[in-house]
Length: 381
Length: 231
Image (cartoon, rainbow over all chains, first blue to last red; front, top):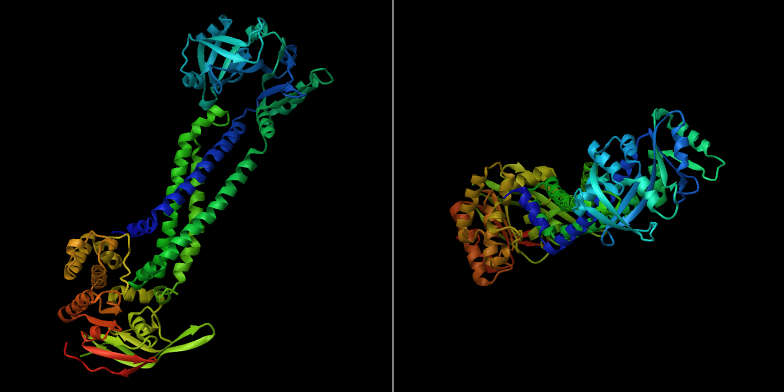
């Protein structure tokens, strides 16, 4: 018999209520873990962005393609280290839900601009030598069980010369992304093949990716590129990676504010739920707690028992919810809004909030127990 | 024989709304070591209040209470809690056991406050349960025990820390006659064979007959100092 056993017994006095309370808290922290995880993932995108990499898109809008001729003019600007065109389309592998993103580009330039993207020179050469070749990210290879040498059919919205929208690609190699493994979730193909095979929008691309010599001059370089095409029929909007990522996020909305609002509302509700449960639990045990006081437990000890009970309830439930969130979080990758492991900072924040929740919701019943007189409690007053 | 409990000019009021109601009036009383006291009187006469004051779970408004040489009426709440842990064993009318703890865990509760090893605590619990004849029901929860058995567990809990006083508030009030007799017999054994001072509040004259002295309270005052009976 220990003090812990006493707390545990109090917790399980009404098992059904305790189980439902634990489930409520666990689900709230599951939601917290997933939403904050996605939020952290978005923040990570911005934090990981490189100032020496620029994205050039149409000033009219991202869906408006730019002429491939822009590439040569960008490359000729002083301060530009490397540039590559990107034609992008999405395809469906076998059935709906199996969406993959295909980048038609100059793969050799891409791996130069993104040194954290890794492949072998042999595979890069194989891609250059294979018209319909594709380099596939490790994540996709694993997700669909593909292997090098496979021919993968994709259903797309891009019409080919023969009128078909089905594209068949030959996997000639794979790539990974160092430090952000989850980002290896795309297919790279030869732009030349893509542009030749498609029926519409020939010679036009979705964006250009640009590497510059001096990251401190990224703002100036963005302005220089945009000035180059100003007053043309295809004006550009050039941003560094961080700005570009933020602009993308703004299109969805203020993710952080949305997440904080939802999580805040959930936790606020939870505060009342937990507080009410603890209050009810203590109210039912007033005579028992009075007996503890009578046999010599001090006011402080009985108060501590109630607080520890609240902490135990919240921490166990929150740990459960966060554990499920950690297990489920990698699945968000398939939705394109997360992936990888749930950040430790999110788990730590969750546990800290659970502790605060426990103390705040446990305080009113604890204070009641502290102040109750044995005589009144035993007399049922 | 020296008084183990001494009340001098004790007065106690309760406030009900705006009214201040006197419960005990200038009450003085000595209880000697090893006595078995039955406190009787009509409802509202102050029996339970007297018991609460002697047990240190309530404080007098006036007067002085000395138990085992300690003036508990001047103690702080924390001092009183510590004092109760080592000097008072409680037995309530409705047993007041922890429903989710087994009999031995309930009995062990007061020992959590003592500086004892797990093995020492277990030995004390075993001895207390043996004394009340429930050693074989140690792993049973209160709901699995009869009323009389629950009260015996409560007596074991009251005795386990070897207190100076045993205070009993209507210990047989919730039991049938046969069970009540068993409990009263047990209290007599505790008093007679183990030398414990027992103070019992009761409405039941038959229960009071088991005591060595009866005190009668009426309107907060002792109306009969109580003749010592041959138990």
